[in-house]
Length: 181
Image 1: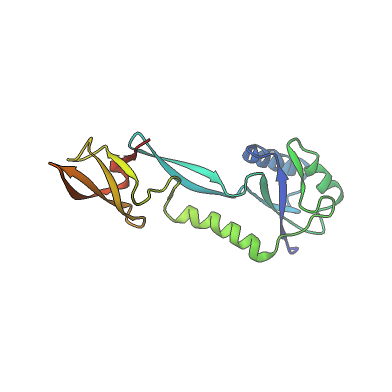
Image 2 (image 1 turned 180 degrees about the vertical axis):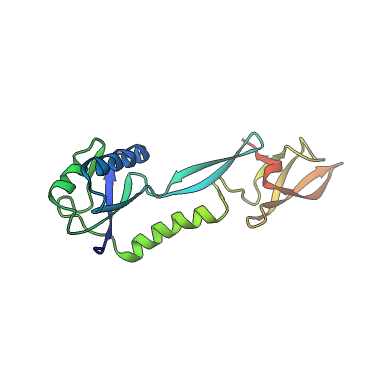
């Protein structure tokens, strides 16, 4: 087995997933499986809270780039031309002489992708202390208060709500509140 390296392929932003599928078809059509082992669109899972519901989506870590694991000796001539001539592909980093990524760089990006598959989600629009939120669930439904403390690990907030003219501290989870616009 030849030693492979990771390369950055510059593509039209927003079309990364479609381009990845197109490259995979081209690889199998031309029998390049031995030369190009993996194609990765680096994404992470993020969530937003919309209407009190948790909506999970993938966010691209590197918009406009796809990572390609390939045999450096095979990434020339037909293979290189075959991939770069596909629609919406701009070029490899290094153009006609693709420059491999440093192992540390590739591992950091790929590690971030793997971490996100295992780890929990991150909130795309984090709550900030001092921000005003509306409570949408629980006994304090419809109350409005200011965030006093944010606990990202436990996904909890301490909110100060005015009840009978006095500030009262209420502990809520992220799903029980929505941001005030």
